Length: 171
Image 1 (tube, rainbow, N blue to C red):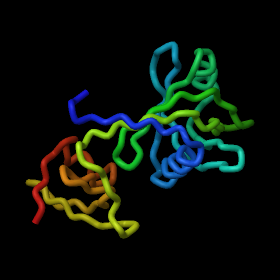
Image 2 (image 1 turned 45 degrees about the horizontal axis):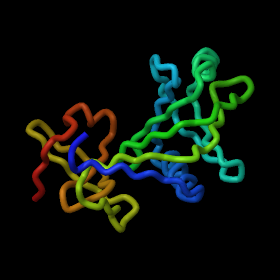
Image 3 (image 1 turned 60 degrees about the vertical axis):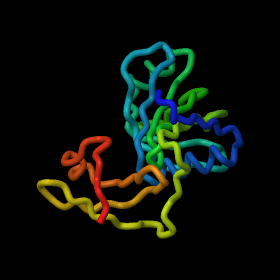
């Protein structure tokens, strides 16, 4: 951890529900890990059931679900809007005949703010950005901006041309 790290704990059910919806809207994946340790399982957020306070996921096979359920608790981590996020889940409810499951919303969600300045989303829903590297131009979307940095999102195919923490000068 760095001296400018800021960990925020969300405890209000409405704030947690909005964050789970944002996880789904951004097509983010999350990694589920058993409290007993071991390898994590990457799953996708496919929806939110607000009435039941549940996150709907895909990509969890029977064996992984059984391994995760065997632990005392299940930990989840994801990057939502460029901010490292983690929480503990009370359990998994698998859906019949597939790789889908339901996760009850957590009681507390932790978010690690790595920038010293407050992040603000751009006023437009999709603020385009062009990134020029030594070898090519990449089209991206600005996720947020602050006094100390900006979070830009590019496709997975284009991400291979950038290293995490790359310094990009603006024009």
